[in-house]
Amino acid sequence: MTSDPATAPVVVTDGSGTGFRLTAGGTQSIESNSELSAADFSNNLVQARVVGCGMRLRYTGRQIDMNGTVFALEEPSHLGTGGFTVEDLLRYDRVKTVPFTREWTVVTWQPVLPTETAYSTNCYASGYPNVYNSLILVIQCQDGGTEKLPFEWEWYLHYEAVGVAARGKTPSHLAPIAGMNVMAALQSAPSTMYDDISNRKVNIHKLSDRMVEKGSSFNQVTQLASRVLHTAVGAITSRAAQQYMAGGLAAIAL
Image (cartoon, rainbow, N blue to C red; front, top):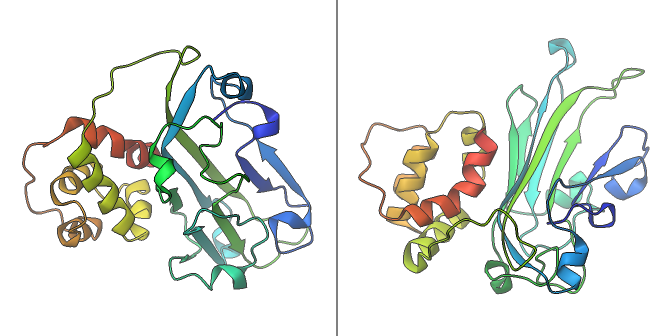
């Protein structure tokens, strides 16, 4: 949640590596544009927690060269993914396998550990002593030869911070019941739902309302994720809960 180069949250291949893992060379770290620094945390000037986090990727090259598959995974225990190959990813039930298209493939972060819903004193908001990159997108495709196949990708991270170093303060309202419904719904959602949101196939406002209403009962939410949007949705039962969840949904749709 900081802008220091030493705490860069994203690692991406630059096309010069020869291996099949992020750890095989040819990578670069991507820094955040956060207002916070690592010193703010180490000096106890701020505490923060992650509200929404995700990455998305799509192919942008010629139609004739469009071949291959994208694999997307949130490591279920929020452990590391840097050394994963495609074979490693396929061992997970929740891995998403998407053929190349010009639409976004999305992977998102949800709270898994109990400490991840509380304000953290470390800049990674991690529940572990070590730091892990728990989200991963892997591309498997035919070699483009002298011209590497082009992709565009984006990542985002929303956080809430408290303390003297937290600037731009805004009111925050606690929604203990509706907020838990939202997190339960997100955790049981099909991973393809985020692709549909990012590609503007699902109305995020109707979806967020339904999550607040239904919580972990995800049948009607799944209908929305399948683009069955015929039923009118009632008034928002908790604006605070919708805003908490919208950090993970709205950001990838914009």
